[in-house]
Image 1 (cartoon, each protein chain N blue to C red):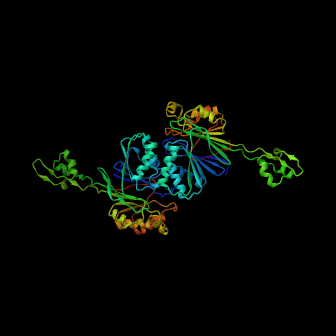
Image 2: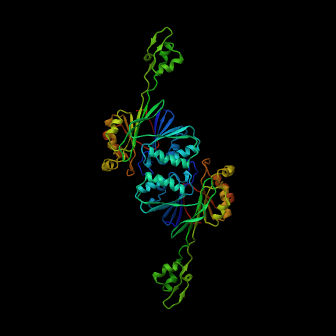
Image 3: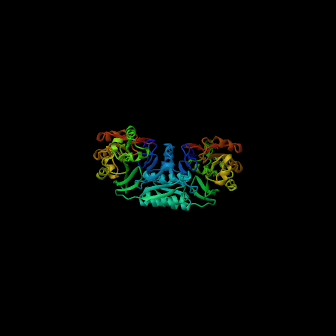
Length: 306
Length: 306
């Protein structure tokens, strides 16, 4: 198990096709699964990608269009049938909590887990935090209220330099403090600075998910300097007008966001069903920003390998 | 195009797997599509089977368990995105109409077609009728209110005997009356009996869909003498207790229903996810009723070939 994997379960746009499924991703944070959007069929794709329902406790819904949330009732019902315990939190706008809350209370009243809705708004806000990661929202510009999600790993522990520790007789119980950056004080009160006993922690990775949005300066500001972004690329250059009209982006605009925000890597997705081959979208994007890849169903990306 | 095709889009039970999808069938009645149950993913399977959204105007939901109806919001939203016109009628229990009505009014308020809910009950009743077919409900025995659907073709038109018509100088305008069984009266007032000018109409086919039910005498009575039945076969013999407890059937019980009702052909489905190979279910069923086949996703059955 790696530290931070992104799994793409669906990266098509509203009309699902035999080539692409509606939006759904799963971020695997050291074995804890976080689902980002939940299009119809998400539960089946979880199975296909061998991601365990039992490890899924947080679901983040970017906005209330069906292709981003119609998989929720089926997924949650199946999780309950399988006897999943603990709590499942759906981070979602108020109206979504009402709609799906009612539906699940009717179709899946006796649940094996506690279902919580965390009501999110459209402003920048930290909406989730644990030992490993913080998740915050930032506003996108779509036809309905819509947010992106920024996943940011917390600072990691430093690595022990075993030889140096042995040379200074650091006792085992102090290793955790060392990893947290503390200096070691010997029994004879000599201070050994931390950096003599440890090496740099791994970098903390950040990932921003920009589901449905038109090209927007505020998106650029929000994702400035992150390592990875997923940005919708519904259309190619020839459909830029459609993109503007329908509050979507072209692949080129997605790449401009990546470049202007100074991110390291860009993943495209949310392809219109008019494209039978997204290579053209990739080419247009790469003219603006070379480190771009096409998202695809079944793909797992190790985000540590920036 | 044949006259009456049954397409199986999903024949798994509640927990969808990579082998079987939740319940969904499409009956093609001379080009008019009628969907029977609508599990999650139905819209994608329609595409996979090349069945046209534009020809789908009636959806029949047997009961309000998620694996029989969670595909509705996505399917109807996509049909609207594709600009389908006319009316789409969902035949469903009252609580289902309320749940999905609210959901669609929120997620898909501007619809390209008129959405109607035809509220059905659990008793025997004709719930739909057109020139070609009548559809009636009959009660099943499940944990929640649940009905089967009986599709019965109307009597068909007789076949013209072209040679005989020529011999009696029957004018073209009278052919339709002939096909309906009327006698021909010559200009000189001689009555030519219909059977001298036509041959027998094709047989009218009947098909009964029994989704979720335990073995039940009232099901046998309801499907007596029909040509084809689909009957759930969630379990094998070794799980008969589970079948009783959960108001489901074994494959053998399904076959007994077929035999005792004197039907011609039986299709099995709604397999529990514990079976990786349903051959054992088929064998047990065939011990009771030889003309049994295993339903499977992607299967199209010409019901005229009884």
